[in-house]
Length: 315
Image 1 (spheres, helix red, strand yellow):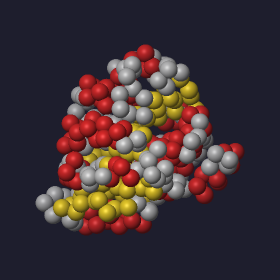
Image 2 (image 1 turned 45 degrees about the vertical axis):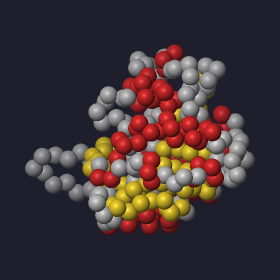
Image 3 (image 1 turned 120 degrees about the vertical axis):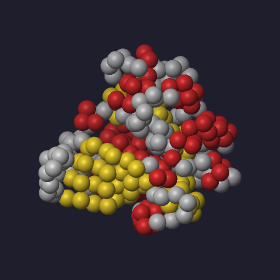
């Protein structure tokens, strides 16, 4: 393990979320509908995971790029407020900060994204030596981080050379091409790959979640699959499969639930928890995040104690 066992570097996209929430959220042509709630919130898989890690007590450094505009300044201030080191977030006047419109009915959401600077992260903004100071490196939204796709393999090679553990979350591929060969190559250097159920089935061309283990490459780390209300499952390198049930909550907004799950799983493993404990801990983090609108800043140890009293020793 590196010098600081709680130091996590997150490299990723950064944008705002415009979240509209109600039970009947679908737009209708030529109709105006009133909705129950709206929030401007910190968005992006990578940033919400970073905020969750900080909320759980990790020492988090975020590497990203945003526009030098109001949305970009909002993102940086929110990360700072949530305890994330933003020293290496670049504000560039040549780009515009990305925006995701989220239509949330509580149980699920539909997303519309303006890319802006979301795909503009490059290796040039990753400081030399940063990975030598950390215990773990993570990134989200593989498919949206367009300029980084050819470079993740080298980043993870450097991380492994410095003794770090590694993880990433694929996110959805808007082109639905899935870049399968490059993903498979990267998995050989990935400790924890954390896709959703549907993403995993598309990437590995599995017909069912039960058949997923047989579709995974031999050279890989653990594949941790988020299955929403069904909980989660992990497929370990030896082929062992473990499931963990979800927590029963009345969700307000599912935005960022998977990213909060990521933060929980990474934190649990860095703290030395067992695989089964890590899955339960991550499920609790994902459930907790659905109890408020917006994904960032919704996960904390205190919140987990209220939701998950039987897991108090694990917290």
